[in-house]
Length: 82
Image (cartoon, helix red, strand yellow):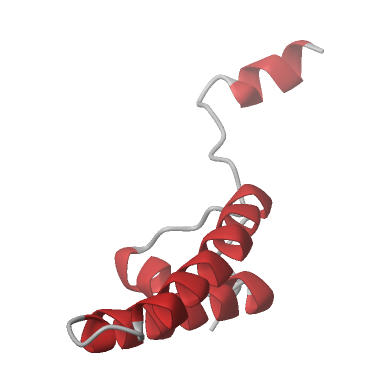
C-alpha cells in the first residue's frame, strides 16, 4: 500500500489514537463498558498504527490522499506568467 496520510492528518491521528486507547482502558472497569472499551482500544490502536505508518486502508478504499494538495487549474497559468 502506498502512503496516503498527510502531516496534519498524522498529528490528529497520533493524538486521537492514544486518547481512544486510554478511554478504552478506563471503560473496561464497568460491566457495560467491556465491549465499548475493547472497541475503543482496537480503534485507537488502528488509528495510531495509521499515524505511524502513514498508510490508512480506509483512505485507500475511498481514494483519499491527505499527503498532497490538489493543484488548482490556474496553477499552470500562474507558473507560466512568472
